Image 1 (cartoon, rainbow, N blue to C red):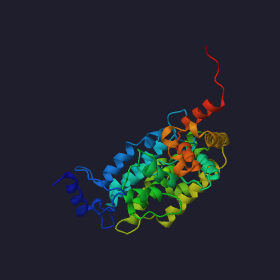
Image 2: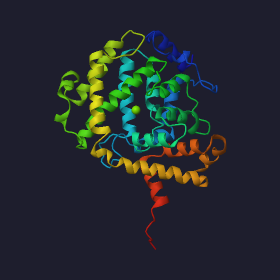
Image 3: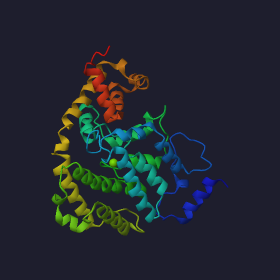
Image 4: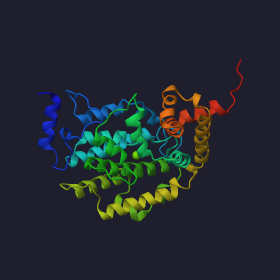
Length: 332
Ligand code: MG
């Protein structure tokens, strides 16, 4: 028996009746020979880690644009924190940890440069609108390699529905949905304190009394609450008390960090960069990299320029802008 088959058998014997078993996957859009060693979800996880879009996450904004100091989160470290939280919950609930990990590692692959400021501006520009979860699916389906990564149905479903209006079809996808919120609410507070946008003592005290006084206590409270509430059940959820406290903390972040703060003052400039780049390529299709240029006729200018601009890291977008619009000093 192959190692993969032994793994699949073990899953069926040990995982929760509500877990998604690798052997029951709805499979891939294009059929492939299974790997002798890895399950379908393990293989998907590896494809995501080896993708170029995954490596670009290291230079994409979480809250602070292109931070120069080492300790701020980037989209890559956010993704790793989501994955770690999600795996802890999935393992405790006896769900499929490999599927959970693959969804978590892929969930933000479609994020724009400059975080939500970038997402907002592309959503304004594009006739079809722009949402990063849909773009993440587009990255794995079309933009990586020549014909996409050909991921399993369950991983694609979890990536598409990790946020926004959708609801993932698997409990593993639900675990990632919650883990994303747990990760960003907590690490964005930590970074906002680090960046002197807020002071520790300004955090709402009545919420800290419920969730915990420290960063790690708060993460722990939320994770444990989900595990206790979801154990042996066919859905993943939080208790009302912790869910309300988490929402209140999120609202505090929106008011004090995301919407109106010193950290946001560079955002208008960042949005202008993306607008200028988009407009430039709209009238200079020939300047697109070859792999994008060849798709314009079939998929349309808007779609393809959006793919190119959305895929840029903060640093790449800034450098492209400099190259196109700022005269270089004469050096000879
Ligand atoms: Mg995320």
